[in-house]
Amino acid sequence: MAQVPQTFFDALAVRTWCGLALETLGRAREEIDSINVYPVADGDTGTNLYLTVESAVAAVEAVFAGHAAASGPDGPTLADAARAMAHGALIGARGNSGTILAQLLRGMAQVLAGDDPAHADGQGLRLALRQAADSARRAVAHPVEGTVLTVASAAADAADGARGDCGSVARAAYDGARAALAATPGQLPVLERAGVVDAGGRGLVAVLGALVETFTGERARGVAGSAYPSHSEGRVVPAADRAPGDGVLDECADGPAAVPGQEGPAFEVIYLLEAEDGAVERLRERLDALGDSLVVVGGDGLWNVHVHVDDAGAAVEAGIEAGRPHRIRITHFGAGDVHTTGAERPPRERAQRAVVAVVPGEGLAGLYTEAGATTVLARPGEPPASGELVQAVRRAHAREVVLLPNDAELRHTAAAAAEQVRTEGIRVALIPTRSAVQGIAALAVHEPDRRFDEDVVSMTSAAGATRYAEVTVAERQSWTMAGICQAGDVLGLIDGDVAVIGADIAETAETVLDRMLSAGGEMVTLVLGDDVPEAVADHLEGRVREGYLAVDTVVYRGGRQGALLLIGVE
Image (cartoon, rainbow, N blue to C red; front, side, top):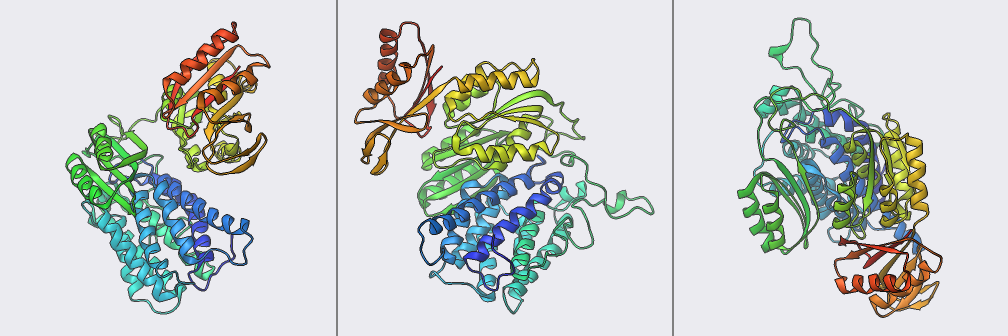
C-alpha cells in the first residue's frame, strides 16, 4: 500500500483509502454488528460493510496489478481506480448498508472519473461527496432520516463549507458525519428505544475516518472505537433508564439489541441484475409494492438490487422479467430471530462440527447443502473473498469446521479465512480440494461423530484419491500443454492442465474420461453445466458402461458453473 498522506485525490489515494477503510472496518466490525437494529436487527451491518469494501479493494488492486503486468511507465489513472472501486463495491455489496455504501462510492467515482482527470483537489472532493450523498438518497425507495443517508448528507454539507486541500475537506466531512451520527437516536425511535446510534452511519463514519487518514497521515479521532463525540462505543443508555451516577454508555452485549414490537417481511433478497434503465424503473415499482427496505444501485447496465419481502420468489421473478439476475442471495430472517422477537433471543448452541464448501454453481450448492454443508457460491470470474468465507464459517456456527475451497486458486484465500476464524476460538481444518468433484468425494466420507483429526484425514484421503478434470471452451488463442488452441475450441483439462483440444463436447469429454480411467478407477462423477445437453451425459455413461464394467457413474446438474463439464474419477 502507498504511504500516506496523499496530497491530491489520485489513483494512489483511491488505493490507500480503500485499504485503510478495510482495516478500519475490520477493527470496528464487531461493534457495528452489535448495534445493528435498523432496518432489521440481524447483527450483520459491520460484516456486510466490511465485505463490500473488501470487494472494492480487490477490484482496485486488480487494476494496479494489471498495469504492473503491462510493464508500462505509468500506473492507472484516477478514473481507472475510481471506476474499479465503484464496480468492486457494486458487485460485492452485502445487505442494506453495504448496498447504500456501494452507491455512495459510485457517486464519488462519477465525479472523480469525470473527463479523466489526473487528480482531484479539495473542490473535486467536495463535489464528489455531494454527488455521493445525493445519488445514494435517490437509490433508496423511501429515504428515512436517522440512517446512513442522513450521515452522508451531513458529511457533504460540512464539506461544502470547507476550504483548502483534500485533507481539510475530508476532516470537515468526517466531523459533520460524527455529529450527525450522534443525533440519529433522536431521529429514529427504534434507535432511541435500543439506545444505539445507526449502525450503517457508524460504518460510514469509519470509512470517512480512513479518508482523513489518507490525506493527513493521522488516524481520525474516534475511528478506533468511538462512534461519535465523547462516546467510546455505539450503544447509549437512554436517559430515562439511567440510575443516578450511571455513565453515558452501556457495554455492548453480544449480538444485536432486541427491539420490542419490531416486525416486518421474512426474507432479504439481493441480486446483481443486468438490465436496461427503463426495465429497472419498472422493477423498482414492482418491488416497492412487494416489500420494504428497497435499494437499487448501479447503472450502465449493471445493478445491485436489495429488498425485504415475504415472497422471495416473486422478488426474483421480477428481476427475471427486468433482465438477467445472478449472484442471488436469499436470507430468511427467521421467526423469533430479528423481526418478531420482543425479548433478548437465547444464544443458539454451537454444533460440534460443520463443513463449509465453495461451490461453482447453484446445482452443486443444492447438492452440498443436502449433504449438510454450508456453501459459498462462486460465480465464473467472481471468486469469493476471504471475508465471505469467514462469514460462512460463522454462519455454520460450529466448534470445528472443515473448509473445502474446491479451487486451487482459492487456497491462499481459504487459508487466510481459516487463520482469522481460528483467532475466534474455532478449530478449522483446510482440505486443499482443487475441484468441486474432490469436495464431493470428501463430503461422502465425512462422519461428524468421529474424532476431528480422523474425520479430516479420511476426507483428505478421499479428495486426494480423486482425479479431476473439466471440459471448457477456449476464450482466445493460446499455447497449452496439448498444443495451440484457438478461440472456440473445446478444451479438456486433467488435474488443471490442458490435455485435449477438440471441436465437440462429447468427443472431447470421452477422450478425457478414457485417459483418466486408463489409470484405474471405481467411480465416475459427472457434473453438467447449464449449456450441456443430457445426451452428453448419456453418451459418457454408455461409454463407461461398455468399456469399464466395474466402474459406476453418477451424474449431477451443476447450473451456471463456468465449465461445461466437471469430471471426477475415484
